[in-house]
View 1 (cartoon, one colour):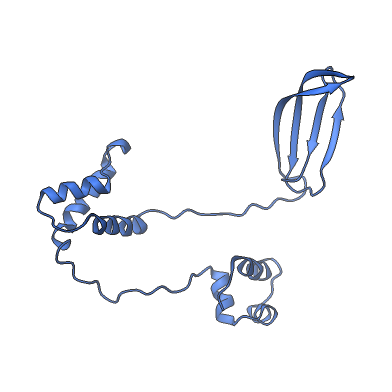
View 2 (view 1 turned 60 degrees about the horizontal axis):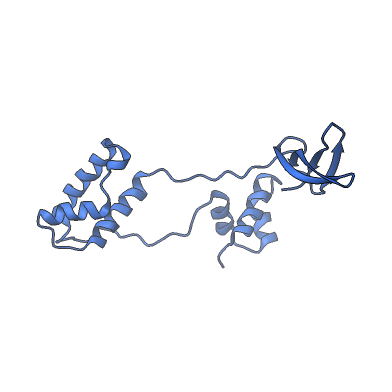
Amino acid sequence: MRLDDAAKERIRRSYYLDRKSMRQIAREEGYSRPTIEKAITNQLHNPYRLTRSKPSPIFGPYQARVEALLCQNEQMPRKQHYTVNRIFEVIQAEGYQGSESRIRQYVAARRAVTQTPEVFLPLEFEPGQDAQVDWGEAVATIDGQKRSVQFFVMLWIFLTVPIWRRLATNLSILLVMKNC
């Protein structure tokens, strides 16, 4: 059985926050211990990998040239980078008989190896530790007259109950505390 994201999060919380053993988590969640270990270490399922690369008779002789163009990209300003289409046109002019999609595959595979992956860090805050603040302007009816008022909005990240406050000044200012 494959783990969904919610199950992985429950397993990680049990292991890191509740300090439960892998054996206890496996018993409670109903998964095997190797599955629990994969969820804790954030391993993905093992995709198939070639044991040795396949021969590439059409693209192979031009691979070094494509690599050289991609290395040139790193030295050039961003607006002047070679696109995959432009790389295809350059090597086609040099005698390449293959398709543009093969160039796209190679560039995508190289990019996957060389680019740093995006990292996601979940943010958790203690009560009163974090809030979002903004100022705004609205039209409000005060004593039967429509007036333009300035207001202050504060969203406490931790609160679950909206709280409304009205502060007395020359123009009514509303303090809004609300859950995101």
